[in-house]
Image 1 (tube, rainbow, N blue to C red):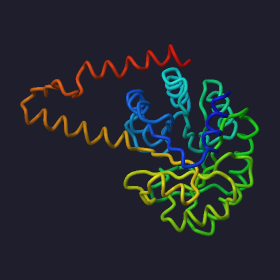
Image 2: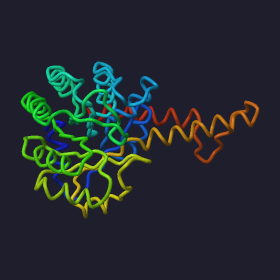
Image 3: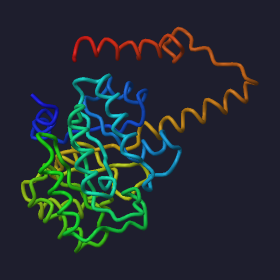
Image 4: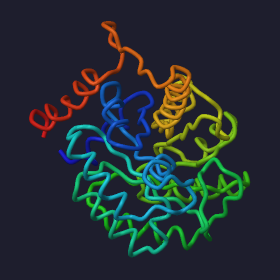
Length: 282
């Protein structure tokens, strides 16, 4: 069974499927111990790979190379990949989709933003004319073989959100995402206009959308939840705290001790699991 088919079947199961945002191989290694699905977040990738905000700096060869490394280390995990606006040009979008499917990505998210693009939970987003986006989406859908395609709108006005969501649900896209939806009432309204089409909800700490549990999302009819930044933000806090403590301790490293603190042994064990996974699951 293809990676796309496996993810599609998982989405069709009862409940809301969680996909955890990862930004490098180490965060993916930690995520893999807890969840069977990953989301390759543009926000996290721009931050980790370039040290820049998610406003359009990502070069598609960098993203494809990262996904290739992920698939090598995690042969059985679901990998949903953020490809922004398809890197502007529809032909480039199709080329990227072909490459990602060839190396084993499970699915992609294609948005309708106009450049300069923004994080889906930022202010100042602008969207393409709907016909222009639908033409690009149709080209991507015709290109993919079995990969899951998520059609995403970044519309911000209620009437436009619902109109676009309804139009996206009428395509052959597998899933619809309205990014930056502001409240539960908005989710319900989107669910109503998208009919039976699977619905995806994006949660990001400090973002525009409400913080909801998987049970709450299931009750709202949401089929997939992507958690874009928990690994990135946890790393930010932990690294900042660790370095502040190192400074206070005059450069003396903490002792991991016998209780499982993270030191070279624990880190090596984590990475050795990736080797074992390649041998047993590929």
